[in-house]
Image (tube, rainbow, N blue to C red; front, side):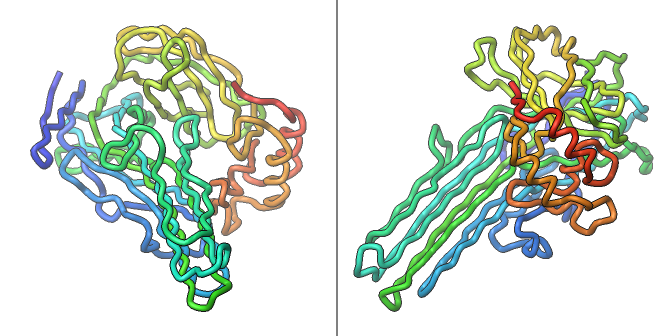
Length: 394
């Protein structure tokens, strides 16, 4: 067992590995984002706080919004943001096709709304509305919506225990397999991508009268993920389970989301992600003590599946095999008219379409509506939603 310690602003970060990992670093200028409306995606909006390198073996991702001010007449803004970072990973030992890399990340989120009104001599003469939310785990953390229409100022932070304005979430882990390793001098290198939690803000300001009234409606949502540790290992195959993705015929690898609860189902202990290939096999690591947990699994586009009383031994999970139900395009854990509507909105689009990976305000892209994975949104996708209509996940 090799152990490496990196220093960052006086804080020691310890990394553990079963194969020598000589460096973990961010690729410079690798911050990316996808926004709704897409018109602001051509250049980094000034309200996005881009991620930055804190030190070797440490990084974070952040995003936020500051929107809507009006002196006369209405102004309404709505933004959604999905941000990610590429990370180059180096190892001094040659990996093979079964080598797995797991990163453990600390997480915190923040949201705040504020509405300022001045010179509004009449009640209702000016008003502002703000809302901010972050989608994380199986929850949506929200502030607002709040409308303020009287003289003065209103401000609200994300509810719950805060640390310097941030809400602390359980750690997250991300495991990759089938990585593409290339030799660089005496080292081997691969590139992986880490996503921030999805954020959404909207704000509306209106001061029709009196003339000169000032309204400022602010909504901010931000996600922070910081490196904690890694494991890179070439194991004997031991899979956490195998999932059958009903109705999916594509060949692309998908991402599996996992949320781990305590055995009473009352507290989120951790979250995880890993790749799930066309064979349906997946591997989830575990960074918490052995014990018994309830685990929810989901692949985007499918309903959540719950596994009760899963026993974790020596950091390993097994026996999580099931069939996932297809058709939950908007991610609300039900298959309903909203999913039909999304297919209708994107009907006929295919992989050659310029908007194929452009998301809407619900973080849905045309590609997400291709739920059978054949590269086009068509009647085949309608058929899956019809077959599973009115079904809900765990």
